[in-house]
Length: 113
Length: 114
Image (cartoon, rainbow over all chains, first blue to last red; front, side, top):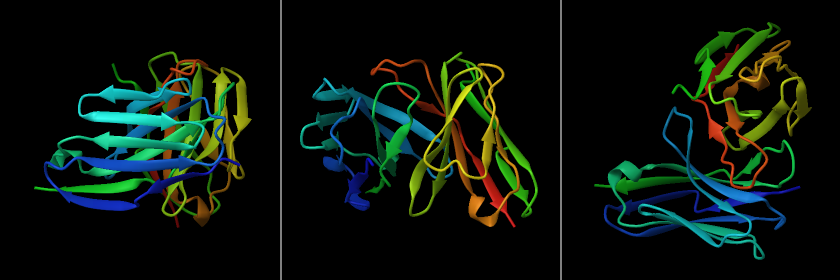
């Protein structure tokens, strides 16, 4: 059974810092990996999707990398801002048909002004 | 473009009652999903659907029933609600099978079972 772990569970940093969120998964046979952002009381917003054949994806100040063989992904946030405060979730898809996502428990991020 | 909508957004019910959570998407995505989110467990898949009239169980299907008579709707029914089903429920959709297809989520329904 696929298990997804996110470290750290919580992180608080001053505004302007660059930071890295980590995600690991136990079964490397994944189809893709998706990073989401969740604000309190809200749904999930997709940030980046990395296909299993890719090494990284970038969107603005966000960069996600994938090392499928070692079962790891990182989300790099550059020049953090208070508006980046949220919970960040990593999820993997095993592939094939109508399969869902397996989620980590998230990293709760606070950016101090 | 409304995307995915869920109703109701908040629901309080009593143990033993039947409850139906609605999910509607405007994108004509083939795949739809139901997840529940609980402290300590994260998000877990309840049921999914590949197309109208095609559904299958996820990780935690017990106590839930789904149907999909139309592509755009995917209701989730709790046949006899229990306190352990108190949770936040998220509906999601995905366009197709391809590895570049993202999954998109609705705003969630917070359900409390007393």
